[in-house]
Image (cartoon, rainbow, N blue to C red; front, side, top):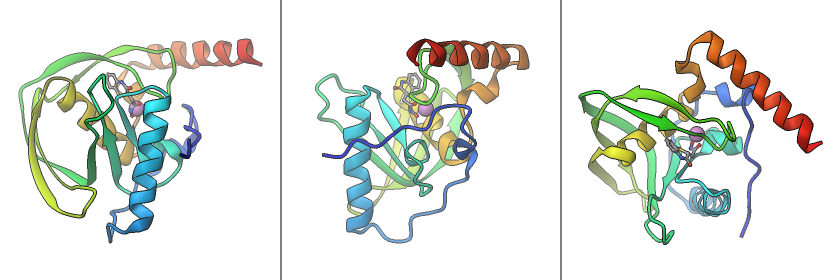
Length: 167
Ligand code: GNR
Ligand code: NI
């Protein structure tokens, strides 16, 4: 089992745009396994490869409490979206900060699974929020980027203070 370090906002590496996966091979499956281990240990309900400084288009999500419903999305694409819903979001790269973000309420996402097979999934609720949050990471976007400049400044100050208290 390998736990990968998670980049912390405002690390500029979080702003990297990830590249499509060209082959779902052993190397990608190793990455998926390490990302899942890292997500469960954190603990979190989702993780994008960007957050572990690997800039390939891979996402893992598990909304179950039992940690046995891993969903893998490789090269995910949102092919339909409708409605607007607001959810209080957090992020493993922005620890201890929770803010409301408005996103599409329902989405249809197309991706490859861990075996390289294409699938299409309709999502709503927390799954829809997570998929959009994780795809944003692959695009080099963090949920904090949707907030006002004032809120962003307050978050940066709070994170600096948290860091001082750890050191
Ligand atoms: O663990 C996570 N919880 C969460 C809660 C509300 C909205 C989005 C998320 S994703 C987050 C894990 C994470 O940072 N993924 O990128
Ligand atoms: Ni996140």
